[in-house]
Image (cartoon, rainbow, N blue to C red; front, side):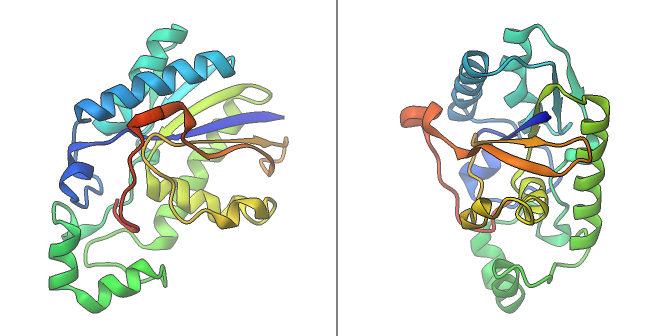
Length: 214
């Protein structure tokens, strides 16, 4: 079995401002940097990591950095793990989007397949996410790997994981700095949940975001 540990990045300046970041680059906040340190400490205590992959966006790379230093591993930047592009919504707050695109935003929150102009289609980013997962599994069979990424990517993959792991169906949002660890068989099928949307390692530094905010 291969264990993949999916980590959503820490609180970013876009999260703090309630901005749809998409593939725009934002730094972590001071809180986000503390969360990254707490993730690293928890991982070091709980897992023997063989590799660390990360979206190449700053908020993910900065979250991965403390773990890389603690384990003495290089971060493998992986553009395919970037957040979903949300086109004309990028850089706008959720309030601005709700005011300017009320019906489309309502459908977006229901995840009915609707998306704004210039955004990646659901099929495109789900395919991208799955290909990244498959490549990581193929390169690390039988190992334990941390994968630092974004809410959209984790949610896209979770739709696939849920086919064999219905316990994940109860999760609607994967929060900042949450950890979801799964075991995969040699065919790349998710077979066991080790952790799901785990946040206890954060203590008082837990953050909760509005549904649908990327």
